[in-house]
Amino acid sequence: MRRIALIGVLLSAPYAVAAQNGVTNAVSSITAEDFIRRVGVIAHDSMLGRDTPSAGLSMTAQYIANEFRRMGLSPGAPNGSFIQEYPLIRERVDIVASSVAIEGGRTLRFGQDVSLLSGGPTDRRGVSGATVVVTGRPGNPQAVADLDVSGAVVLIVASGSNQWSRRDLFPLLRQGPAAVITVNDGSDAEWRSVVDGMNRVSLRTAWRERSANAPSLAVRAQAVERALASQGFDLRSALQSDSSPLSSQRLAGLTLTINVEYETVEETTAPNVVAVLEGSDPTLRDEYIAFSGHMDHVGVRTPVNGDSIFNGADDDASGTIAVVEAAEAFATLNPRPRRSLMFVLVSGEEKGLWGSEYFAEHPPVSIDQIVANLNADMVGRNWKDTIAVIGKEHSDLGETLNRVNERHPELGMTVIDDIWPGQRFYFRSDHYNFARKGVPILFFFNGTHEDYHRPSDHVEKIDGEKAARIVKLLFYLGLDIANADQRPRWYPESYRQIVTGTR
Ligand SMILES: [Zn+2]
Image (cartoon, rainbow, N blue to C red; front, side):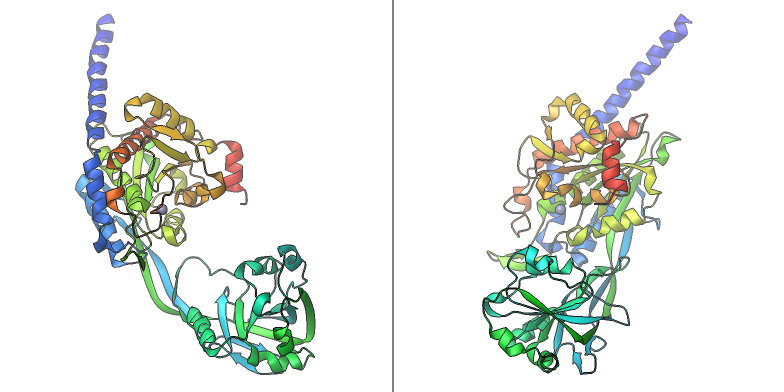
């Protein structure tokens, strides 16, 4: 008995030492030099700011997929490769098929008489309603909200100092009008720029319906002058009255039908990269910890100080490479973590969290097999020894992180909670698409800075030494979650608020 027990001790001690050596070796692969080198690759000018979709983004995805393959990770996309392409549509307003019809009168033509500003499209029958003419300056939002415009086509007649801003329209749109049309009495040149805005090609995700918001349009004054006169409304004198108070008038005899249609210019795609490291525990390996970051940035824009390439070294080459560096460390680990790990680099984040939304809707495993998401977006700048981790208060991942960080004083990292609750960062990066599907998350974020969304977000400004310590913290945290007996748990109130509730 005793002897066997002794053998047990003798056997398990070297095993524990070996495991510890494995971890130490794995962590030592995470270096500032590696981090900076890889950020330098994807934030290089030749990637042209990694807009979604673009050649630079596809090259970035290919580079990361090649790195994952070289590390010996398995392809993780649902189609069995490293890359999950998601569908996008380029489209524009179909100015021939779209129209505004005045009952008993003429039909206004898009481009010439009317122009779409936002919202739409409508179904084939279009939207129609009696006209409510609103005159005067919008003044305070409550006065606008008090106008009775539900179901109506609202015609806003206001020029000069009475003019409405987009913001002034919000309380009006909340009343549920069929459409809002602003009368434009500007020059031909002004009108052309309005029409140019409408004719611009826009990009959207193919799986989501266009917003069903009421269409907002502009109409040239001369196109509706006669129809309004027939209802006893003098458009010219209304346009000339300056600084007049807000008022509305229902023209029951004037019904407008608005039909907005889009035409597809091109069907295209953009990439997510997904890799897997299978866990060592026969049961727990069906559960996954997903690490994420976004590869995309905002591309090439108007130059600032002669530089038009928005390199996005911090946003989010830093988070992307944090995931790649963590993956590399995990790939060398022996024995492997008990749970499986998934490395998910998405795109379209800057357009509205597109890639992560598609991933969460089309995950390679059932979404409830993903037990945690650790997202990194902007982890290469600002404080030397501090990282904000958003979402700590919503699940026991927060306590796990505190415990793991305390166990590693050599990292010299201080973990702080969300210090910008007013900015609602919890809802502004890719982890949110995991959270709303029920996956507990933590979001690593160093805050914004003067180079945020500017061409000057350059690799030279990245603190690789600090970033490497954040990656190590991510590694230790991921390892702890992967080896724990229990999967992470939401706090009930947070679950109600974020997953089942309405925001
Ligand atoms: Zn970002």
